[in-house]
Length: 290
Image (cartoon, rainbow, N blue to C red; front, side, top):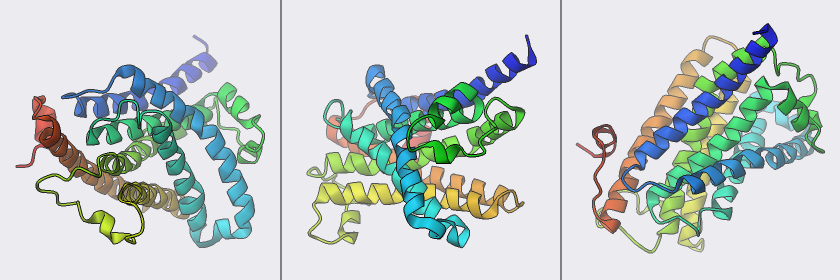
């Protein structure tokens, strides 16, 4: 096997493997009442495709912001351009496809938003490791400015970057969107209130004139943007300084903790609505409160 081919295969493995692992994790968490594989796959494909228009929108936003995009360690670039645009695109995918087709549990919000997010993250990964995908992406009108100086695809540097992304960026995408998914699930079933709900008053944080489904959705978007924006800002502002190796695990660890709590609550709500369903011991250990 030639070194070039070996590098390409390694890059594809690193790009695809973390996405597949996380897909299985989220499906396993929903194993009691699993969603159809076809619906999850289509949602992933739509998330994959959503990466391109989102990138074009980000280019336009950076142009509009000008030098402000770079101020404060690229604060607006991280929060407004990247986080808001990308998480809104993933939310749009959920509303476009599974929302009125197979969305019958609160936990479905977590499953489908994470699927859209992992499709999105897979496309981003492939851009870094596969020169052909990068070339095709960079040929899209409006996207080219993102590709100036982009030479890592198909190289050792690109492979290393893909490994770093597999350990940090891909989980971040999935966790941020998974948090949003809980809120979308609550928005879908806003008219049904559980007997004991620790989070039922959250929409009251927003003005009363906002409809309750919209309030739940906006809170979900805010949660996803909060995680995504904080992660991106840490990467942009800290670069390769040693503190980044503390900051990223803290951001990801705290976000995973929050997602586990919300998944637990989503499953309890679904059990109350639809009747208790059996779970494997691992998922029960994660999702059932002690």
